[in-house]
Image (tube, rainbow, N blue to C red; front, side, top):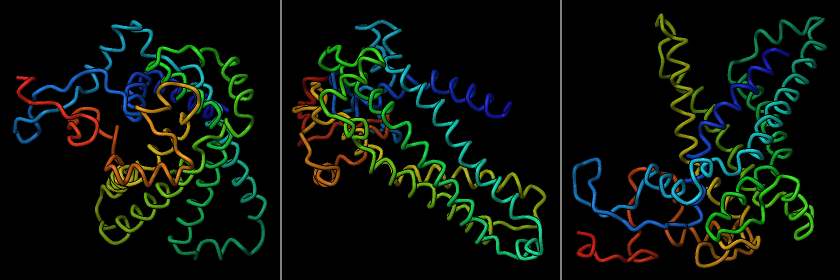
Length: 303
């Protein structure tokens, strides 16, 4: 019980601290660029035309709504985090109880000789079920969070309170409205999890020397690195999910010119791929201007 409470408190603290970052990220994902590009330098020192980064974007939001405005959508996101942590823990606890019930008998010998790869598959499958259950239960709060952020673009007040937002979505879209963008989000989580654990297993088994004294530390580092790599590869699923959650929901940010109206998440995926926008919002610092598409600024006007 204490572990669950500490996880909830830690998760809530991280959610509060990261709220401004997510706010900026979501607005960039839907294509909202209120500030003109500037002349700057990339990591190689070359002069380039780039869009404002995280801090400039956050300052723009604060100049309009104040610093408190940077935490728009925090309440439903906190609800999502707390509920997701509880559901995730309950599912894993259920599996642990099932293991304890199967322990007595001669099956212990068989468990000890089972391969490490089988153990990875077993643990990953259970983690997948726990995460999927948490995502399914908390997705309605995720949708409300995104829409309350995106309404900054049109200065609407359609999704202000949690209860009012729930009533609005149910009245206009029915039950399915609460699960807009769920499929790509689930697929992204599942692929990322399996990719991360599989890569970590391969690295820990074949690339690291088991005789090294810092073996446990190396394994934890490899898990973190493979997790980052997997999240980068599956970022398009996150982008598509967020766009579908706000797509054609009655907000300016979910309609043209910021976002086209998509018939399905596959249509959204294909259109983003065609435009070369699958990584939009992935970087919050070194952001290149997508010439030839939406932004066609003359560099001489910016000097």
